[in-house]
Length: 73
Image 1: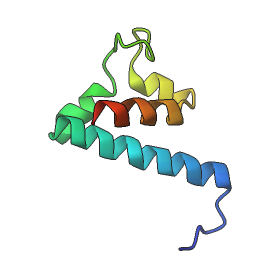
Image 2: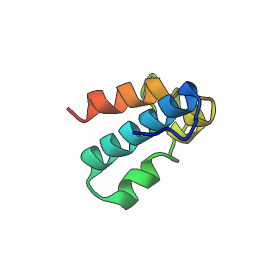
Image 3: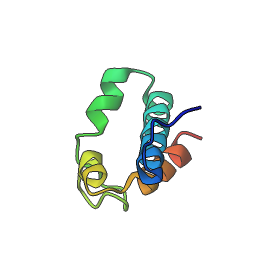
């Protein structure tokens, strides 16, 4: 598998985003519900009332993926 010269951190973020996407589709089933969830405020401790997209913008890919994968079990 070729990485087209992407830095390791970029590949890691891509991997986390793919994991986040998969977990959201597993949890919600409906793509519209999954995509809507990411922009709504969330009261879970990880989010502190903020939307998931805010945490992703700040770079919390790994924490988000871990949270969602745990929720999807």
